[in-house]
Length: 112
Length: 113
Image 1 (cartoon, each protein chain N blue to C red):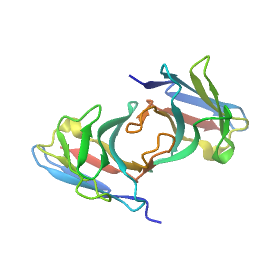
Image 2 (image 1 turned 90 degrees about the horizontal axis):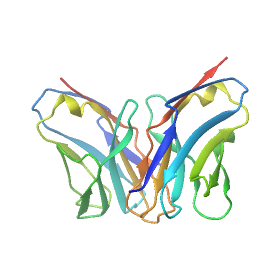
Image 3 (image 1 turned 180 degrees about the vertical axis):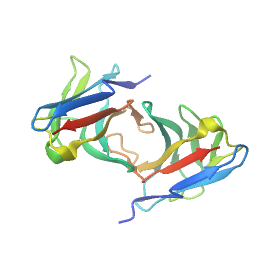
């Protein structure tokens, strides 16, 4: 069955530092991959998605992710963290049309 | 733009009571989903629907029921509420194309006491 694994339930970085949130997927066929962000007491909103084509995907708020088939990874990065980036981030996979499966989430904290 | 609308936002239920969580979308999406979110567990799929009259179980369907009589609405029914159903529930919808994302409602925070 398709699934995603997010390494690290909590990541803390200093303001201005690199953000790296890890996501690995399990699938024999590359799926469609998504990163969502959830701010406190809100629903999820899409940050970016990989479908086909360019493996480096740019999203909103300066985030980007690189699809690496050889590593079955889709890690999320941002060069310089901002206080407003504090939130929970979810990686998700959609291989078949019907189901979207989410990882367990990574809470990102930003230190002043 | 309304998007995906969930009601109510908060609810406290007593053990054994039942209730229906409402979800409506105005984007003409074929697919709709119900997830529950528990701390540290991510989102678990409860039920999903690929169109009016068609529903299927997700990862954690026990204790829940759904129906889909229209494209717009996808209510989630809790029968005989249990403390284990204390959670935040999210409804989402999407187009059927595999390369499209889901759009989420704001969630319903349910406490069973």
